[in-house]
Length: 320
Ligand SMILES: NC(=O)C1=CN([C@@H]2O[C@H](COP(=O)(O)OP(=O)(O)OC[C@H]3O[C@@H](n4cnc5c(N)ncnc54)[C@H](OP(=O)(O)O)[C@@H]3O)[C@@H](O)[C@H]2O)C=CC1
Ligand SMILES: O=C(CO)COP(=O)(O)O
Image 1: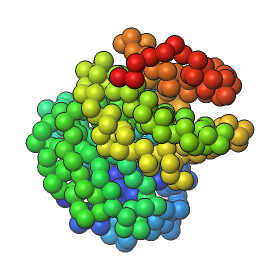
Image 2: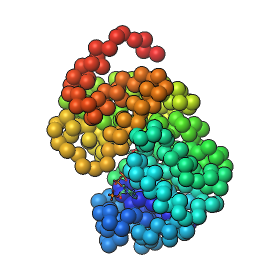
Image 3: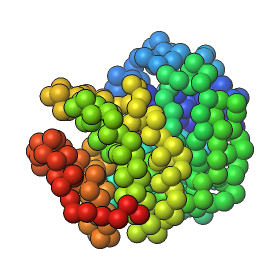
Image 4: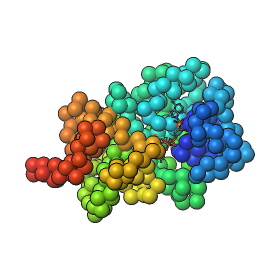
């Protein structure tokens, strides 16, 4: 299949590497002035992997879009809308857009497939999401994992799952686009909370964080019209090891560095997603104590230990 991967950072480059490895004809496209693009286009390598010669690296967006039957996008979520303005200047009819990103637009509370839906006719340009656990550092070593592809379009998600499955990634067909997207985005916020616990030396609290984090995200997914069980699926709980426990996780590292007073410079999607989820929680009358605590620390300057103390002083609740 002819595939273009737009965005050549940590995850976009890994997706391009993977799709080439399983036999596709792949173009990797980045912004001409992005450090990740400059490194990849000049050396065919980055901090995570080496591209085979078969992957073409370009900053020519029109060329990348025209090449592709499937367009994969993997950039920072808050920039998706502005990037779509450029992508949509090309004819997208007959192409499938696959989002390999985890976030919710903070300004609108829209899921990422909804953002793309503002630019395309989904009858002609179906949209899918590809989420779940995995870091390039593990995939390039051949360590397998399971992921999920979801879409409103049944035919497309089954086709993608069948085409992209291999011994390295076992894909499942998602059945709840709302849950898959919200669950994937929300695990980054819970990941920041986990990092804060690590920073305090409270790693033993991460089991409780997993139990209560999934509950509140399940409530939100249900209120938004999704299936609450998705919070216990690959998009969310299934991604906790990669985020709440992994040394590779940017979100966990962000939280740990934050409480230690160190600035973490790499992309941690959970920061802006905490804002978006608080908005969705308010609009839908869903209590999100952990997400709101993370938000209060990051945006309202609340001391992280005070935020944790407040969580413990909440009124007594039933567990389920
Ligand atoms: N298992 C999984 O499903 C994983 C998913 N992810 C997700 O992938 C997405 C990307 O993360 P990651 O690769 O770590 O991030 P990176 O920061 O490594 O890469 C993002 C890339 O997008 C580029 N970019 C930013 N803004 C724009 C724009 N407006 N137009 C075009 N390109 C832009 C960046 O360029 P510049 O540097 O110039 O800003 C950078 O090259 C995130 O949503 C993340 O959650 C990440 C890891 C694993
Ligand atoms: O989504 C990911 C793992 O599945 C990557 O998470 P981090 O951004 O926290 O590294």
